[in-house]
Length: 458
Image 1 (cartoon, rainbow, N blue to C red):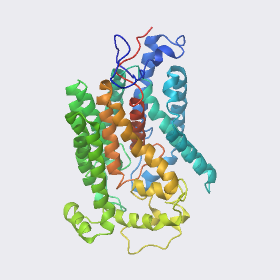
Image 2: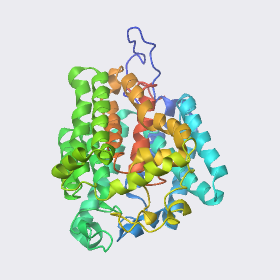
Image 3: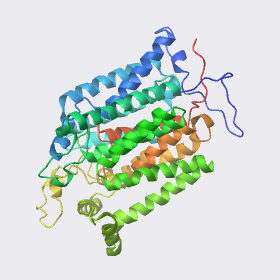
Image 4: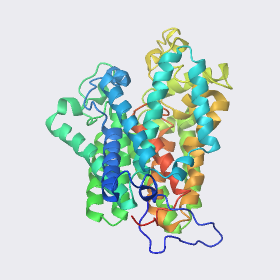
C-alpha cells in the first residue's frame, strides 16, 4: 500500500529509508494488465477476501454449539476457501512486488512453517491434520493478500470499508429478518444464551470479538478522514457487541482502544506497548490467578457474577494438569481436545462442563502449550503476540504508517486480552483467527515498508 509522493523517497533521521510497499502493480508483470485494470482487480480481490474472512460461504449455518463446532468440515466452505487460495496465490504472483513476498521469509515465519509441517508429519492421523493445516495456511494466505494487493492505502481502506461493511450489514439483516438464526434461541447445552445476538456467525462468542474488530476498522476509517462513515461503522458494531451479552468482550473492547490511543496522544509507541503488558498481567491474575487464590476468585464473582468464567476455570485446571505430561513438544497440533487424550477420561460429574466433549480449552496460551509444548509454543508466542509489538514500534516511526499501524495493533491488544478466555490460534477459517493473523501480517509489512509513498503508475 502507499499514498502517492512527489519525490518517491522520504528521509528519516538516523534511519534507513523504508521502500514503498505498493509500487508493486507497476513493477510486477507490467504488460499483463493495464494499470487501471490491475488496480480494479486488486481492490476487488481484497474486498471479496475481507468479506470472505468475515462472513464465510455459509452464514447463519449453526443452530447450536455443537453444530458450530462441526462447521469446519463444511464442503462448501472448503471448496470456496480452496478456490480463494488459488485466486490469491495467482494474484500475488502476478501483481505483488517480489521484495514484499520475500519479506515473509523471516526466521520466525520460517520456524512457524516448519513447526506446522513437523506436527503434520508426526500426527496420529496425518491426513486429517494435513487437511486442517492446509486450510489454516490458505486462511493465512488470504489474510496476507488482502493487505498487499491494493495499490495504496486509500484503495485498502475502500476494500476494508466495503468488505467489513457487508459483514456488518448482513448480521443486522439477520437480526431483523432471520431472528431465529441470528439470535440465540433455547439450546439445551447453553440455555443462558437465549436472546443474545450472534448475527451470521455460529456463536455469540465469535460474533462479539469480530464485531469489536469491525468497530476498530470504523475507528481507523474515522481517523483517516471519512468521519461520518467511520462513525456509523464504529457505532453499529459497538451496539452489536453489547447485544452479544459477552461481559469480558465488552470490557476488553474499550480497553484495547484506550491502550492504543496512548501512542498518538503521547507520541510514543512504547507507552502503548507497556500498557498492553501491564494489562495482560492484570488479566492473567484475574483469570488463571483465580485458580490459586480464593480472594481473587471471590472478587471475580463480585465483579462478573460468576467465579468460573462460565465454567472455563474447569478447563484451565484440566489444561494445567495435562501440560506437564508433554512439556517440551506438546500433544501435537489439533491433538488434545476432542481426541482420546480427553475423551478417554472418566466423566467429571463434579465439573461445571463435561470437558471430554469441549472443542478447545478457552485459553489461547494454555492450548498453545498443550499442542506445541514450550519449544513450539515459544515460536507461536513470538509470531502471534511478541513479534507484532516490536513491529508496531518500528511501524510508528514512519508518519504515514501510524494510523493503520494503530488499527492493526488495536486488534493485537484485543486478541492478547481475549486469549485468556478463548482459543482461536491456527483455527482454519474461523473469523477471529483470520483477523488475528491479518493484524500480524499488517504490522509485519508496516514495519518494513512505507505506505506513505509509492511510485506513480506508468
